[in-house]
Amino acid sequence: MKPERSILPQHTITYVFLTLLGLFVVFPMLIAVSQSFMTNQEVNRWPPQIIPVEPTLASINAVLTQQDLRLDLWLRNSLIAATGYTAAVLLLCAPAAFAFARLKFPGNNLLFGFLLITIMIPSQVTLIPNYLLMRDLQWLDTFNALVFPGAANVFGVFLLRQFFIQVPTDLEEAAVLDGAGYFGRFWHVILPLSRNALTALGIFVFLFHYNDLFWPFIVTNSLETRTLPVGLAILNSSYAGQYRPMVLSGAVLSSIPILIVYIIFQRQIIQGITLTGMGGR
Amino acid sequence: MSANQRARLTAASRFSISLKTREILAAYTFLAPFMVFFMIFVVRAVVEAVRMSFYDWHILRPSRPYIGIENYIELINDNVWWIALQNTIVFTALTVVGTTIVALAAAVAVTRPIRGQNFFRVLLYTPSLLSVGAVGLIWVWLLNTQFGIVNYGLSFIGARPVNWLGDPGLVIPSLSLTSIWWGFGFPMLIFIAGLQGIPEQLYEAARIDGGSSTDLFWHITLPLLRPTILFVTVTGVISHFQVYGQPFIMTNGGPGRSSYSLIFYLYQIAWTAFRMGYGAAVAVCIAVIMAALTSVQFLVLSRRIEY
Image (cartoon, rainbow over all chains, first blue to last red; front, side):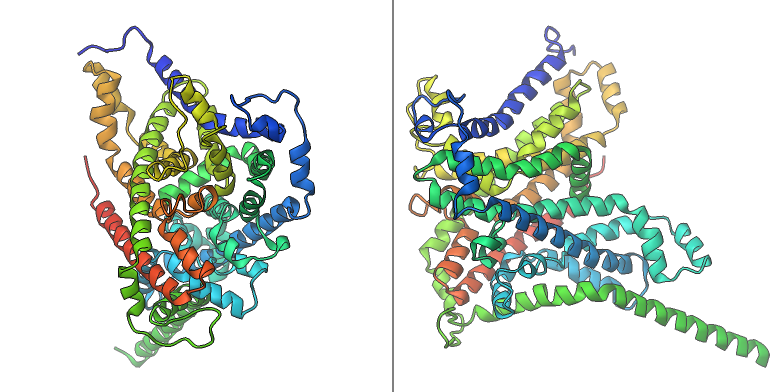
């Protein structure tokens, strides 16, 4: 057998493919950016304009100044809610995972098995009762509703337990000889050695929550308490019909913060997502 | 055994019991915060959902009579439920197949020893960071019949304008295309990790035997990647089955009910019609279907393939 494509070096094909795929990925985003700088007339034109003839900030301005759009507040809410949620998940899951990974107690395996089974129960079944609970607690329109109901993340416990089990026990034994108790072992040995896993889970749940739409949509009602994804849905329903470039500007503006974070922390984010994805196996 | 020895033993065992007890107490303390939240927001909620599904529970009506399995009987005769189920299945199948193929091809390409590997990896993951809102708004306009770029591109090959989101037969494939664009980054990363786990010697040996790159892909890469492919497809099924944002943002379930998904329908029942009892029944049925899918996942994945 001889190499079939001896005329073309293999890398050329790879580059051509990656360039096409890269264009497929980038083009929609670039079009949206470009059309954010157009007027309504220019967007509604055939053939479609790729580059604005006379770039204008009008629609970006409109998105930022309309009374019924509060991108600044929505971004702030999204950041606070996603940060709070991530902190809650880590604070709840890490100690539980430590107990499952390291401590002997009656029912350890039974309880862990039960938790694993509940992974199979999709969160949709909890939506209605949890929504009614939020209403009864008067937590609608508060950060509590965005942070707490999803904080008992079983997958997080499962993932962290996997990592904690792999931490060599001799380090903990040394700590015990130095007089460390259970909390000392957890705080001074396990946690520092699992920084990668904690970061990975943190990034994963942060991004999930930051982009979540359904739950924030049903537990927030007022303009001031919405999150970015919900705000975009509102922007769409009130402006898509009359002023398209505003909607595109909103989509672009709302994506900028996360893309900046991505440019700075690309390596950590890619590694974190990969690690978390693989951890589920 | 002397009395002395026995005394020492009892002391030792008493000491060990107290150590054990301390460990148990510590374990429960570490578990308590998680378990409190878990009991309230998962266990209680699931039990409550099942209970509610046997009641005629309207959020605006004070009386909530017990009606047995009537909600479930209504569900079986509910046309929209079956339409939504069918839409969800078609969407899931198209999206999972498309995503897996694109993700695998991308992963194979970016793991070649080429310059710019990392650049492409980072670039291709970008759409996955966007919210469904941003993705939906961008694609609604790209797919617009009158002014959309997609139809513009197709006009060069002589195609007539296509009504991507307004044609009942095309709306689900269109939402799938959007979702593939949005979501192939995550399986791509999983595939990259899987590809890096394949020992380089296997490729070297095959190359010495004269295998072409295509041979290597079909006879080494693909078989060794089978567990990863299974993982990606099965987790993909679970996540795409819960599709909600794309129809919500892009089509509002339309045209007609052609892009109703199960979760979209659940939203309509519970938060537009305020029928919490019927919504609970719908949610329970969705949960049962998904639990069945997840069990299949566990079964398939636990059957590890060794080479």
